[in-house]
Length: 444
Image 1 (tube, rainbow, N blue to C red):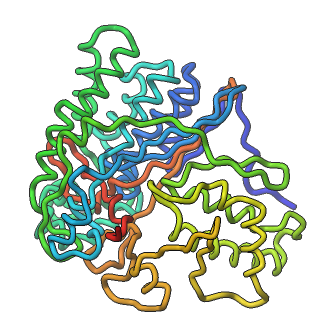
Image 2: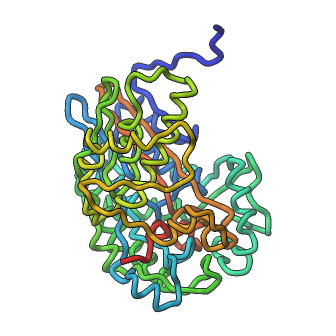
Image 3: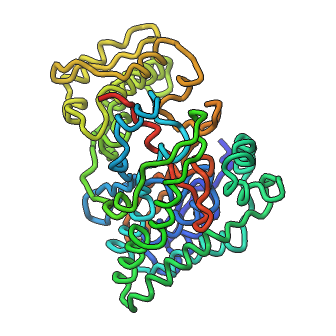
């Protein structure tokens, strides 16, 4: 068999990401003596610049790091809901779903704080050293990927009529970014330059500089601009203009946190995922439901995989969340897995079938039930998913970054949210808030 792609090997380490410029920046850091965590931070900030339709500084990031010779750890860069984002607040506005776009869907941005914490605790480079790549691409421009302009076109009317600060950045002269055309974001470059300036004003110590940058982000000029902009009513996917609930206090209170990953061993491999505040454990449930002895790529294999995926996702709908009453151990237990396996018959199922771990009755939002029962309306399309256009037909997506260095340190991260189509651009910062709360149901 002729291989059309080479086997990739290296001595400094290896980088994989969803954009070549982010991979190149991260690789440059490895070649300059940085470790996997330095490289990941550099690559991540480049991703914020070159894939604004897939992630941004106003979004979030789950990451798993595996230090050489140490146990894997999760770093949670998912910001919480603002204190004012209550069920009562949304329903008082006449809403039965959190809008898919706009200030009401904004959680506390978690990505930048998490990347800065990673750099502080595990990196070796200064903030200036890792941000220089992102600053250059934002200030001098980068070749726009095709999907940036295509995404802008889907929300052109919204940008031109309502989100005019976004139009100024992404529709200059009424023209969307052309594939390969130079796309600049000078305001974002200036945000990163100012963050560096505030960091270096704290002295020459690397860790102190990064702490100063974190404070500037959550309590200083960035937080002030984000809170002020969130308070301004903006058109969202409900068809109405609403102000957000994000405040300076919400931004100041957030701290990224380390935690142990959820793991499952399948076919001799121990797979680590982020916890129940994400959908990560659904993959572990999929593996648990897939018998070890199945021959790969056979019809039976695919049938079992697909039907098991449906069961895992049904459990996700019923049991995953911040205040889940069911521990992940129960969902991954051999006893529960065997009960679920017995539901896989010879034919495909069209039902949403969450289980009853520890004998508990599953709870599903009426919106999840409605979609599962085949109902399709403008409000149901994409309900609970990253819907980003007023008509519900355009969705956001995400990006990814993996790095391993010469010493064996590894990291896998999935920056997401804060898309250009999420919220209006904050003009003095060069990026919008995210919309992660769109995935929350308004059910007690």
